[in-house]
Length: 181
Figure 1 (spheres, rainbow, N blue to C red):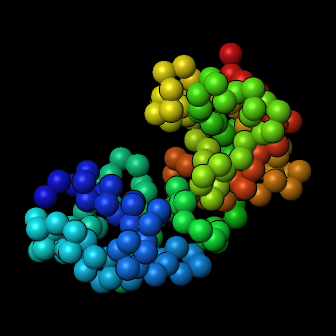
Figure 2: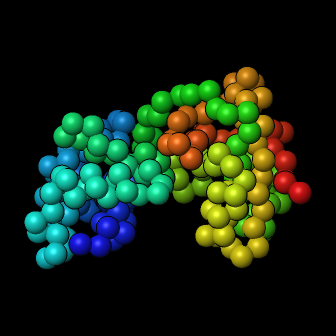
């Protein structure tokens, strides 16, 4: 069983198109683990014997914690593009957060701040190196923005916990951002 392929399938089912897998997400993004297992077993012959332990292993061994299991429920922690906004747990962010993107998007970001675009939330990294890696997924010419997140939070910009490397926001106004040199 290819763990990377299974992780991608989980993300697709829980973040982007649950209806293709006949899954129902609740307001917090949770789906029945049994329903996810059934749907994935239908996807590929090699997944017909897939178990909850297999999914748990993939989640535990992933270098980027993207999913979580609680009892017999499973959800993606961030990255959703499904219609309707999922509830997130508000939190007090670290002093600084970072966002990596393509150089071509910088002029718009400088004027408008960070917006979620096709996702439900803006994704922010806890360190500049991770933000740089994220930016490279979009372009070879990247820009890393430093976000004064604690200052923004004190000014009533809400932040939400994603995982140990990712924080989420509805939007980040440009006055709390600067391009790193």
